[in-house]
Each structure stands twice: as structure tokens, then as C-alpha cells.
Amino acid sequence: MSDANIKRIKSSEIEFEEKLVHLGRVTKVTKGGRTFSFSAVVVVGNGNGIVGYGLGKASETTAAIQKGVDDAKKNLIKVPVLHGTIAHAQEGKYSGARVFLKPAAPGTGVIAGGAMRAVLESVGVTDVLAKSKGSSNPHSVVKATFDALMKMKDAYTVAQLRGIDLNSVFNG
Image (cartoon, rainbow, N blue to C red; front, top):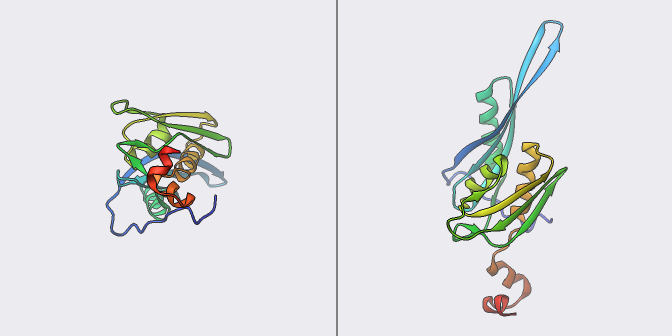
């Protein structure tokens, strides 16, 4: 996937909702005793098609979460959301995690597991069918979901890429 297709957004003018996906605790045993460290996977989104994820590590939970939020605001993408669902079915993968996203009829709700649910709700998707296969590592599942969302294209973008008008996309 080339970086030309990924639309980056400035975070200074947008209000975001933050969701903690996973908080991990790591223990380092030293001569002086145990030292605890925390890592936080955080997703931020405005509920209107803009979403980002970040990883923060620190010796305190609040500091790790704040670092994750700051990192997430640096990695924002724009996702086409049509009538509360995604534009088309799409697969995404990262490392051992595989995800499959499929548009759903209004009223279906977000049928997805923990890490995927946080990402999809932050984007603003209200109706979607999703399946996670392979690794259940929250960090990998979030990255695989982002891979699928970055591959999404709306009809207007497809028409521009093909060099045709919007009606020709649907009529053949």
C-alpha cells in the first residue's frame, strides 16, 4: 500500500473520543526488586470517519495512556463511512492477525470483538459485520483493522481512479 492513498489529518482542530483497547503490565526483576512498566494501546476517533491508534509505554498507567493518545493523534486516517456502515467488504492483515469487515443493513449494530469494536465505534460505524481470525493480540488486531480501513474506497474515489463518471461505477 503506497503512502499516496493514505490521507493524513491534522488533529489540532478536531475533538476526539479516546478508547483504551489494552493495558499491559510488564515486570522486570532486578537486584533491587521488581520494576513494573505499562503499555497502553489507545484508539482515538471523532465518530465521523477520522480515527487513529497509538502505543504508549511508561512506568505509570496514566502516563502510558496519555502517551498512547498523543501517538494516536499523530497517526490519523480518514475512512469513508456511508449511512453508518462501510463502503464494501474488505480484508486486512497484520502479522498473525487477520480481519474481515462486511457492510451491514441499518439496525444490525457493530458485530465485532473487543479490539475491532473499539476501532469501528471510534470511526463512527454503527452497522458492520466483522470477523477476526488468527492472532488475538489486541495490538495486531487493531493494526489489521486499520489495514482494512485504509484499503476502503468510496464510489467517488473509484470513479476518479478509473477516469469515469460516478454513474458508470455502478452501471458497469
